[in-house]
Amino acid sequence: MRAAFKRSPWAFSARAAATVMLAATVGACGQMQREGQASSYLVVNGLEAAPGSDPTTYGGHLPSDVITVVDDVPTVFNDLGRVRMILAMKDPGGIESPSKPTTANYVTITQYHVRFVRADGRNTPGVDVPYGFDGGMTLTVGPTEVAGSFNLVRNIAKKEAPLQALTVNGLIISTIAEVTFYGHDQTGREVSAVANISVDFANFGDKASK
Image 1: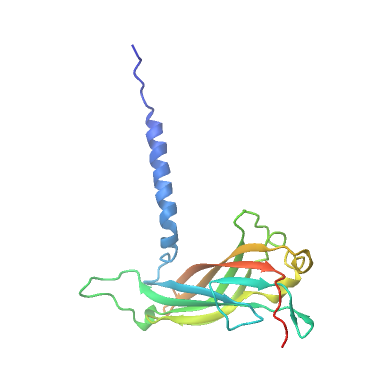
Image 2: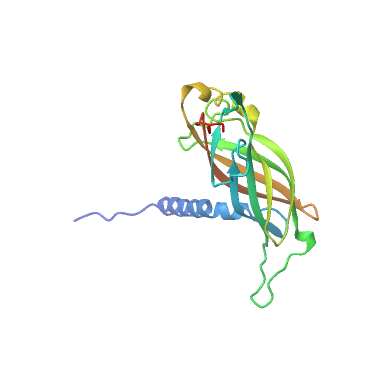
């Protein structure tokens, strides 16, 4: 006769804890935009980038040229980012009486931070990816979408490791640029938002001079 098996109560506790942790991880991305004491939050509608050698050609992916030959002169450009944002209320209200933001709820972006990561997990700054950096910007976001430009790849980064070696070794470094925007509503309560864009670094071919 097969002996009865009694399951330990700790097994149920561990399984329940794992379920809670998984749920927390799945919901973390949405919660990040809503953290803090402000009654409003930022929605990033789009993040684009343009190479410094052609700053009007914004797209959803950036091929960052580490060195560009212009009129037979090797030149280093910084690359630009452009973000589109809109404001939303944490308490949306009801269908018949939706919450409408006032000017006190408007969020002014004052600073941003760029961090580069790789899908293979090799993320040591100055060895595997460029150093992260902080930059300043001023952009006030209300209920109508607004756009703001910023420096996504610094030209100094292309003169440092690991990007400088790409000018001669023919390799490509594929990264994700994680951009965190920091600001505050008009009562001083802090607000932040995160957006990502793919950035490939290499010594790409240059357009022929006319």
